[in-house]
Image (cartoon, one colour):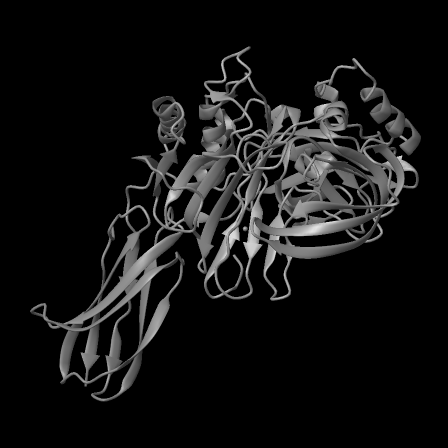
Length: 558
């Protein structure tokens, strides 16, 4: 099964994750100064048996050091392990394995989210391919604590026997069972905290939506509220924005956050309250239609190009186009435009390119990158799919990856919609897992709710206003004005001083900035002769709508 898979205050560019079907992970490259490329990863979902059989090396051990290397192919971290048990491959007391990313001496950091993270002292199992890469992103590392595998609860002895059994001749490479895709969610009932209701009973994540949890036994001291997550074997995501906590009621925001350096969203599933004394409540089911990563395109549209590598050019492009058209038909204020065929690939060149590559690690279906400017606006996206897989229409039984389904998921990430991993989200395009021979070509209500919330249909321009002002010749006065758009995140503003006959005497123009429901001001040193002048305020929103109401006021010069 394939798992699907952010603004630095740097003065130039920051990178952000964009994911695609499979487990789209993000590679966020953060440069302390200057732009740097971000990478995201699409993973094939692999069972323990598949990892064991496809790996060149399987070992259990302890991390003793990590070193970052710059190679022609990019930045990687060399992880040095002291091997306790070599289960496959040549026995060795020490083993070096590699993961993408790391921090270079100049301060540039390349973080590939949802990839395995290693720190000295970590006890773990690792599954490694022939080139030394840890396989399948986070799936290629199993953390160990107190003799048990974290996330599964089984002992290391049991896990080692399972791996050895998978390596027996003739043993099939089992595919992940549904219970293995997401570890079963079991929340014990408690005589202490009890959830009776959550209002509203569904709400999106990353949209600052507040919910009220009513019940009893929560305690007067603040504990924690956790929503369902489900990715990376981590079942819960904590709500950090809790505005009120009493014994019978809690107000909190449905959370997004960072889990294992990956932009994560709450998903559909149980909510649990844990008291300050550590007692857990009952599990109360809750629906999360979508998760939003808090970034946007400055303009409500993007043009993309497809490089099919000369293989099934027409089919591949048509399937990408079909995926984009599904989003276009969702009724939002955003539009994807087909730019046609190209020979370009992944590069920071201002082009949004979907292409195919021969150079991705085993178990990685694709990698994507996207860029944001200093204002946090998306400026470019690129996607690479791996030629290690057969790509076509993903018809059932065909064994092919569906170009359209993966393109739809990836395009969802271009919109900065986040993955959701819970079983209750499995009908969504933004569900975090997929497979060969699987088509998911229809947006679920949650997917539609996401794009229409981020980019609502906007046909009304901002409302503008100005305040009267009085100033003496050669004096200075503050001119107050307002440009506000309830539907648009950003607005462009213009303030003009003109004579009664319309001759412009002074003009200020500001580019797109956050829409603000309040008064702006600008200092003005007046060189005008005595008399009355008109102050005019206009604006434009991201959808291109000009002011629905022009601001007018009088400037009196004495």
